[in-house]
Amino acid sequence: GSWRPRPEYVPGKIGDEGYVRIFDTTLRDGEQSPGATLTSKEKLDIARQLAKLGVDIIEAGFPIASRDDFEAVSRIAREVGTETDPSGYSPVICGLSRTKFPDLETAWDAVKAARLPRVHTFIATSRIHMEHKLRMTEDEVVQAAVDAVRHLKKMGCDDIEFSPEDAGRSDPRFLCRVLSEVVRAGATTVNIPDTTGWNLPSEFGELIATLKRDTEGIDNAIISTHCQNDLGLSTANSLAGAFAGARQIECTINGIGERAGNASLEEVVMAIALRGEERMGGLWTGINPVHISPTSKMVSEYSGMSVQPHKAIVGANAFAHESGIHQDGMLKSKDTYEIMSPETIGLTRQDDAGIVLGKHSGRHAVKTRLAQLGHNVEGEELDSIFHRFKDLADKKKGIVDGDLEALVHDELSSSGASWEVVDAQVVCGTMGLPTATLKMRGPDGMVRTTAAIGTGPVDAAYKAVDNLIGVPTELLDYRVNAVTEGINALAVTRVTITPTEEGDATYSKTAQGRTVKRIFSGQGSDSDIVVSSTRAYTNALNKMIGVLAVQNSHNEAQESEDLEKQEAVAQ
Image (cartoon, rainbow, N blue to C red; front, side, top):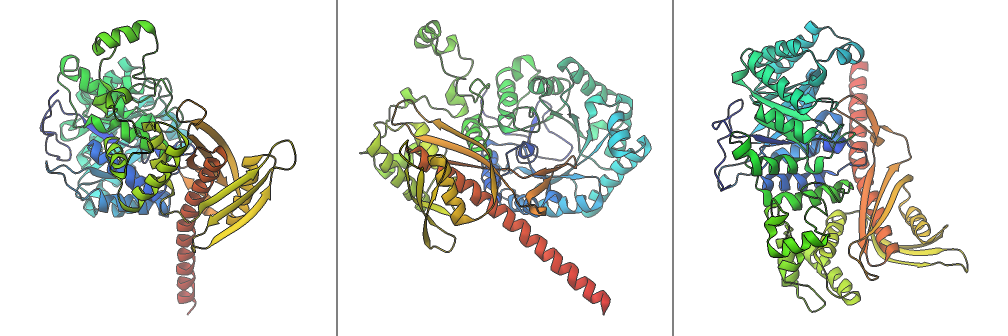
């Protein structure tokens, strides 16, 4: 459809009854998926990209979880949450919190600098959760929820979202009671999570319709959906919810999240864009879909979670036509097998682009192509990418978009790094022990050299890195992929690691109260597999060192504060 201005943002009200708010929780629920620890800088980059995409609400994190989380959320609130585009849009910045007062205060502190701050609080309402997890009665749960909303109001928060956790398995009558009480107390959005992905679309749609019909005062709040994908129904359930009257949909880029993930933003948005007008009673969103593909790639690279090739909308095969019949139809008319063009979501077909980069291409051509792919790089970052582009162009003919993307992500993930690979060389084969010699530049700017032997070339290189950096880690996963076909292709290596030293900083808390060991991913690219592997490992270590340093310095500050208090008491 043609572009139209989104209704002005007012908590609890939407000026257009067909408008559906998109609430993105990639940085909170998405980050809970195993292996997806993001650094503060990566979270900020993703938040900026989500604002370009035009999401209405960015759930930036769970501020009480760790010092690093708190810092990341408040930085997003200060930087992304205060920028306004020419149409007057700026995203709502939201922090998640349990109903405990210290949690609520921390969440409000983290988001309050944004132009439009929101706090999202939750408590479980299903019998199984109330009995086994909370050990609370229905009355106690209602009281905790109401107290939380009132506490937020008292602190000055006017945009409050409440979620009855595991609503999909809760008694609808009890849900109506809880929701009417929290709305009376001041909640402006009530979110209905199918936490375990248990519902079928007809069932979930019916639940939303029932709550809309039977909850007292529900007209003063927006109903929202949050569907998990355990049975592969999260998109279908979200759309069924919107069809039944929900006007906010919670989703994540690429559908990442706990277990089988969440409703995928790109699927929900494109389904509404293509079918909302004629089949869903005129539903629409404010999303600018040309930013879908760049956002999907960024989240995949930063989180280390690849997108399956046949994933709807953003998978590598979503617009590829292998079969002869399809190809013939496509050449005659693209509408034969495509319900949307790849250009809609920001993908350019390589063959339509007409521009192939090679060793004679200049800085400007590289910069222009990167901008078309959604990467605005300047200054030192551009110099470094261009330098590596020239190296690669000497080794292979015709640099494609995939090669450029890999170089950019490698550069972005290593910018501001404390350790970097300067030179790497390995000797291996059947004639002796695989040996790696490595030169690295450390945080102090000094270049150090070491050598190590291992069971193979990559193992030897990793042992050399360990010799220099000296942080004990365990390698959990190692993968190499070629960006293009052919013998001279660029290799992209992804690794995931976890710290082996025990300590508070090595664990993080999920919103459900579980403690999980932090996992860090890193990626590197080069036409030499050993070099790309060494870069990936170094990038993962840099991430880990950065996050642990923030957490440790916070712990030390806390300890000295406690010590001062004890001394003051002693005196």
